[in-house]
Length: 72
Length: 120
Image 1 (spheres, each protein chain N blue to C red):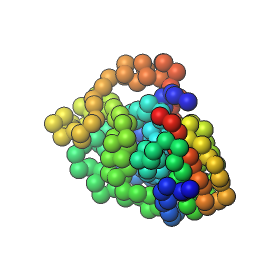
Image 2 (cartoon, rainbow over the protein chains, first blue to last red):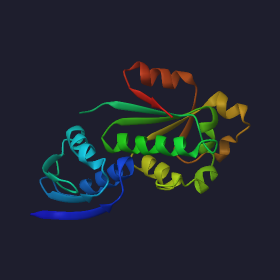
Image 3 (tube, chains in turn brown, blue):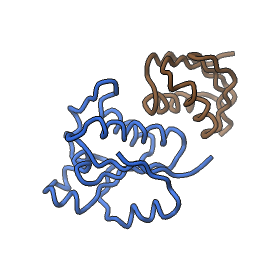
Image 4 (spheres, rainbow over the protein chains, first blue to last red):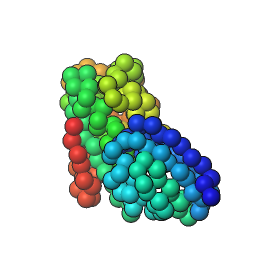
């Protein structure tokens, strides 16, 4: 079940990540966030960001990404 | 995956593209849970003056002030090279909130502890 969704449009790189980080923080651990990001850099960036931050990338089919919020 | 990251920015209105992209990458680093420092030196120190960055809006990017505000709100630190700042006759009481004037030792300590650094 998707707790929150956000269409980031063409936003990419650090602008996208800082917004995404803030939105993920607002979730309860375990909740799923659905991101729609058209930027071509998102294909590599979102999996990298999830590996660095510990959020779980549950689904990735550009431009849609579903991310499960980490525990802490 | 903890760690630190430094972005060195040496431009302001003389190259708004580099100044902007530097802060975009700094935002990526702080959003990725890195202890992130932006080090402003040479022309970059002007960005630490209140109001200076307010009219910098590089095509294809968010306005620079918004990028800087987001960076600091997320816990990123901005350090300003002291001799570069003094040489330009800039006013310490006009520093943007959250910026700190430092000497080279701060940068050397941060990088010496193993932080990677990218320069713009």
